[in-house]
Image (tube, rainbow over all chains, first blue to last red; front, side, top):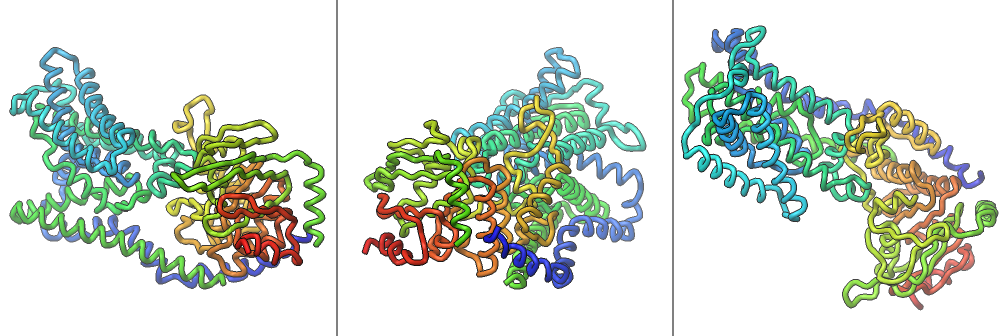
Length: 350
Length: 261
């Protein structure tokens, strides 16, 4: 083919500098690798430093305690992570936990068996999530901030109304068991978190649905043009986020043997913070469930450490705020470095 | 030019147009973006679509690729009138579009970009979104595809955000070759590229044609039109003002048709 004859030379010329390409940007590559491993490195450093500062920190009992206390944040943060992957935000998760726990407690007192109570809580969470997703997508709202802010208020109000403003004590024994020690000194809730993490990460990594979430988050308009059912992908992440809130309600109800309209206060902020601290990008399309888990554990470790070190409670809020700023700035820095890599590659090509 | 002669032969074997647009008319408010435009393109043929800014090139291609709907007129695929209501419809009908903005997912790898929205997955009886990705199969097909097209990329497991403009353009064009069965529309594929990168993309365009696709190439570059296009259609102010076989000698004629002088 005469007109394709010159393809060979182009490819040949382009192939030549290939070997040099990799080694010419080691500084940038190292920076990028450090940034993507950043949250894990910081978490490990934190644990090392804290084990020197406090003799109680690195005891099995304290570590198990940290995991138990971060179980709710972890599980809800995983749902929040999927939403943030699509460039969204779910502000309703905290109120959703409260409403689900109250509805669950009421169903228990109406005589429902344990598995029905669990189904009611998880179903209630998913229903609120479905309302978020459907209104955001089909109500053509400009940003999920608005609808999830509305459901934050509605779910909270509904929970207070249904529970008459008070906690409703009493949960089935099998739900309470989640708060008790199960195996290896760990509470049952930790295994629920691990199970949810396993299922969600398999779904996100191996299913077409997971790939679509990343595509929608990376470039929503292109996803439409590539024939990805963007509307349903968006609805699905809000449903999963609500479902995770429902599971969070089950864990919290088990730990306290109650349902309460006051559960999940500021949980939306904790979960968003966990996702961002863990290293997922707020710009969408980047990060994995591990980020949400690492972020949640890091928040748990910081709170625990400040307690052990007798630092006043108000200071915890300041520390976590500072950590969020650092996390977001390192995301910005990562994007900048990637831009540099691209420029260097383009320069080398021409 | 032997290239032109060769593709004329190919066009002669597939005599009926794979894509025909008849009397296309499209209004945006009071603006007549397209006014009774008809074009035809055959398999193994490159149709150059020329015109100044606002001449209606992009509107016409967006109507073919399902982004806009025609107010009047018809789109015929293999002779049959076809309704194209969405980009998904167009892809399903075998029409691929390489958009000017590339429509690449920066956070995905080249292979993931190729198969975005059409992932190879199993089992078939599940709804599309719930199937499991056949990642290894997609990776293998990506490697074969890139080798066939002689596209070299620094790394196949890196996200495309890290790649240069030419590499990204090559990925976008290569993506259209994966699934193109009838028509490929390329909207200014070389607009932002350097000399050598342009060359690579033009070779890809030729490869698309050689696979038997009907190619519609929008470009401002007369050299590229003369080199590649078997026919050129010129639009001005939403109307078709000319159609001819571009050669070195009638380049000037083409330019005056475009500017209307």
